Length: 188
Image (cartoon, rainbow, N blue to C red; front, side, top):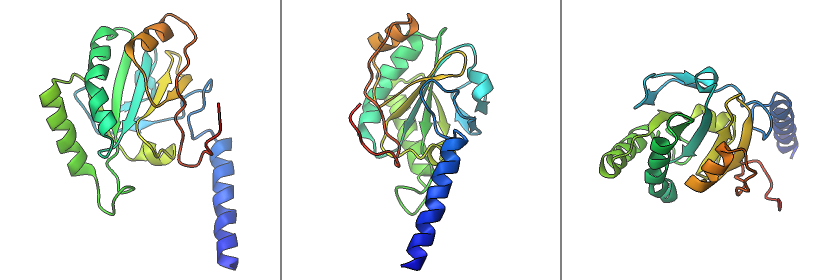
């Protein structure tokens, strides 16, 4: 019992510090610092917040168990082509050990490569588990939409072309909220 109380106390302190330091993305706040060191199908092999300045950015976090994510990739690829001068779409594929006790790195790479070829995708991808852990992401997709100034404007689980067009035109858009692992599901 005593050890359970200590563990709970430490966890609560971690959450309070994490929220205070803004390590999670929060709508209308700057995107916390992210670094991607394994980027493919992009002009750079490493990316960070500074690489996204000046354009809208869509970070599309997914894992290999998300069939919906795979199904949406052709739409994202088309959106990348349609909005290429205004929006950066970056897939962020989970390659850690959260879902199994072994690394998902090899499997997610093979899965994306097969999907990229079959669907003729033109999307950049970062293989990264650090962002998932830093932001405490669970269900996929988890989509973070960041404005050209680096401020998070939406956190959602879905986006389509007309919604993205409305966002670019400055129109208010309702998008279904995506939740982190530690968030309680509350009505919006």
